[in-house]
Length: 349
View 1 (cartoon, rainbow, N blue to C red):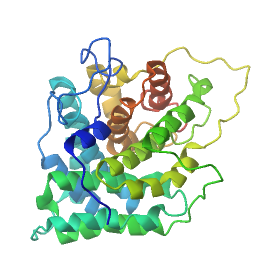
View 2 (cartoon, one colour; view 1 turned 45 degrees about the vertical axis):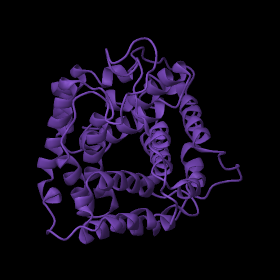
View 3 (cartoon, one colour; view 1 turned 180 degrees about the horizontal axis):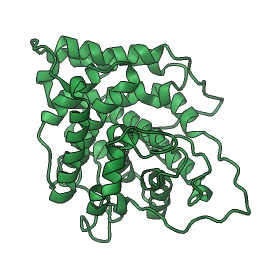
């Protein structure tokens, strides 16, 4: 077991999820600031969303089904760690409630058992087989482990045997997947290098902007995978985080697709500010899409976006951008990453 001891100052330095002036209108002035506390100063959700999220993960019918519980956890932390304001938080709560309602059986409480906080360690303890040897399932073992361990530390009353067993089972499932093996690239020197490599990788795809018909690789999970490894280290598992570097290298190394030089890119660009604004969350067309099943032909921004990925990518991205000094890099990567969430014609991302 790794040494979990870490002072609050060290933890805060690694785990701040602060948005700069690009991110949320009116949150800051012209410079990037750090929050005064881990919980920030904006509106927050109550911890019933942590309880629901953990339950939704433990009850998942297969590892992919755990997306819905994980998204509820990410939505909670997105609101807790950033100054979103009452209106944005209320709209996020409304969509999280829709996720819970539409998959009511998955969020039904588990039979009550005595909690044992020491059981929490079983979850990161089950991770190694799922990340050893390369990339499996777009990094979901790391993503699910990171979120659930973080949440259980905040609501240790949920550290009940059946719930812990259910979440550990996700890692056992993913461990059975044949990994994509890393090449000969050297390991990252540290977490900061890993984060910077992720943004450098995203920036390579700038020529895809405005060309929705060109298939993108999975930018969403590149971001959530990166944050999950960062968070593992922040929670006191640096050795485990480093063991995931090889798979991460595979993940962000996707090639840039060829682009027909005769095509013209559309001018409209999405920003993080637009995604976090009230208009985005209250847009009737968005809400209609989110509450219908995803369909590759007719509803590409369906429940794949709002139920499974929108909250996780925003939570993770807000945490990562505080570690990138170059604001132009953040601006460019925001457009590349979030185009998928703004334009349903975008293929992949």
